[in-house]
Length: 208
Picture 1 (spheres, one colour):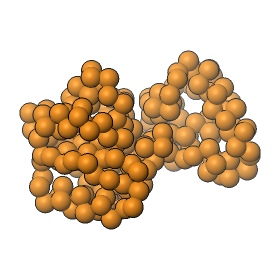
Picture 2 (picture 1 turned 90 degrees about the horizontal axis):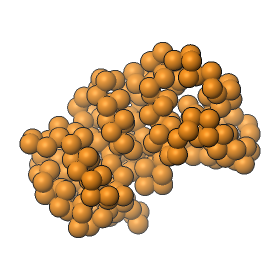
Picture 3 (picture 1 turned 180 degrees about the vertical axis):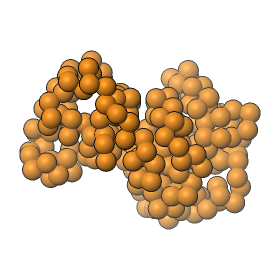
């Protein structure tokens, strides 16, 4: 069961999210609130697998709240909900260690997928914003570190694909995907999937 805390100061929207998530058999909403301070307390108390945070809450923004969560060394994965459909805001969110970025306009289509993706160690960016985020030009000096196949694997990792989906998409084995992932981590001197996503965004490797 994936435990979730929701923090959004728009009551009607939050109630809609609550109903959406409660309709899923594998997801349990353990708390919801419209206050960022209350959200921090609830996340520290409930230790949910995933916290869904409005990125533009009053007093404390979602990104600032994420920093407070990290200070407390809480391992909850963060999915940001936002009206901001610009690549700069999305990039800042991902660089702040968020695992997901979902546009409010797409929430009722994408949120269940996003929660499941980040809970299983993946990442998720709303498709309607990912193209803007991923079209940034590559930094050739860094991009040269990776082979063409490694860039393909990295692109799919950053889009939230599982090893099995990457294997099917590239017609290779899951073991080969795992080998590519290990080599990419080693070459870039990073340690997590979130690090790979941030690198891909920074260098613009993921051209749609």
